[in-house]
Image 1 (tube, one colour):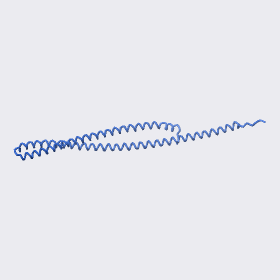
Image 2: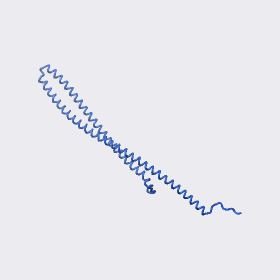
Image 3: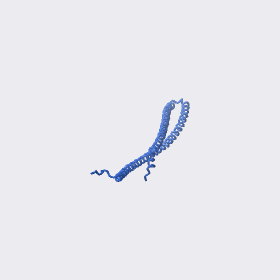
Image 4: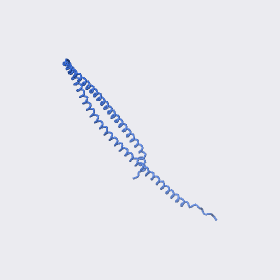
Amino acid sequence: MAEEPSTPPPADQEAILHQQYRRALSSFEGIILSQIDIKNRLGDRLNYSIQAGIIVLGVIAVSILVLLLTLSTQVNRISGVVAEMNHRFISVSSQMHRIRGHMAAMEQRVGLLGEIQEKTAVMDRDMGRIGADMSQMQRRVAGIDAHVAAVRDNVGNISINMDRMNTEVQVMSVEMQRVSRPARSMNKMIPFP
C-alpha cells in the first residue's frame, strides 16, 4: 500500500504561504507605523524644546536689552551731572584764585597791623585747607570719571556678549533646520494625516 503524501497539495500550500505573507506584511506595517509614530512624537518633543529654548533666549535678550537701556540712561545722567560738577568746580577754583589775589592785596595793606596780620595768616591757613579740599574734590571727580569710563566699558562688553549670543542662536537655528531635514524628508516620503 502506497503512503499518502504528508504535504498539502500545492494550492493549499500556496494559500498558506499567501496567508503567512499577509501576516508578515501586516506585522511589518505595524512596526513601521509604530516607528513613524515614535519619530513623530520625538520630533514634536524636539520642536517643543526648541520653542521653549527660543522663548527663554528671547526673555533673556529682552531683559539684557532693558538692562542695557537702563545702564545707558544712568550713564548719560551721571556723565551730565559730572560734567556740570566739573564746570562748577572750575568756576569755584577760578574764584578761589581771585580770592587769593585779594587776600595778598589785603596783607600788603594791613601789613603794619600785627593783630590783623595774624588773623590774615589764620585765614591763609584756612584758604590752604579749602584749596586742599578743592584739589581732593577734583581728584574725586576724576575718580568718578574713571568709574563712568569703567561702566561704559562694561556696557560695551555686554553688547559684545549679546552679539555673540545672537550668533550662537543663529547657529543653533541653522543646526536645528539641518537636523530636522531628515524628518521632513521622511514625512514627504510617507505622508500621514
